[in-house]
Every structure is written in C-alpha cells, then in structure tokens.
Length: 158
Image (cartoon, rainbow, N blue to C red; front, top):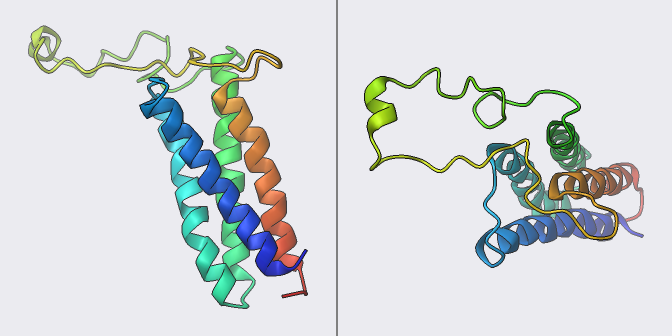
C-alpha cells in the first residue's frame, strides 16, 4: 500500500471507531463513562491528523497519528483492567467508595442537580462471542491502527 492509502486507512479507522462509539451512545443507549470519553479524544486527534499527513510529506504527522492511536489503545487496556477488576480505576467512576468525599452536605441533598454517574468498572456492553467489552475492542483495534500509522510513517511509496 502507498503512504497515502495507509494514512486514509488509519485515520478512517479512527473515524469508524468514533462513529461506532457515538452509535452505541445515541442509538443503542449505552452511556459512556469517564474513561470511555478519554478514549475518544485521541481518535479525534488521529482523524484531524489524517489530512495533514495526506498533504505533507513529513514523517511527523504519521508519528503523531501513531501516538494518538497508541494512547487510546493504552487507555483501552487500562479501562479493560478496571472493568475486569485487575486494578483500581479512578475513584470518581469506580467502586472504591471515595467518589463522594469532595461533595458537601448541600451537594448531597440537592436532588435537582444530581448527576448520573456511569461507573467505569462495570462493563456496559460486551460482544456475545469473545466477551470483549467496548474498551477491550478499542484497545485491540487501536493497536492495529497504531501499526498502520507506523507503516505510513516509514513508507517510501506515496
């Protein structure tokens, strides 16, 4: 494949994953947790880096795409570990019990402004075949996208 084809594949892959996340949220009704939202930002960066890498010959935009894809993959691995109780997650969205420590009594009694907290340590959806959560799939697919970005960075064929 040419460098430009690899860039389109990698950037388009992030677009597909981001659109899939929005489809789960807005069509499927699966609300994202805080860590799910963290995983979306690097995909947005990779999408924006696509045209820059397409129109320029510099190696830095594909490397930045590689870092973006690797970052969201890493967050997905971390999130998977939190979901599977391999390690603790952020106290603000996991079951450690310290999430209310920063709230005052008035905050706790204000039912009008009560936010809905989506827990990071609970699997909201898992595929029925491999039992992988959305965070796990993001980790795997984003790692593949990182490899595609790497191939684009080292490719000599335009």
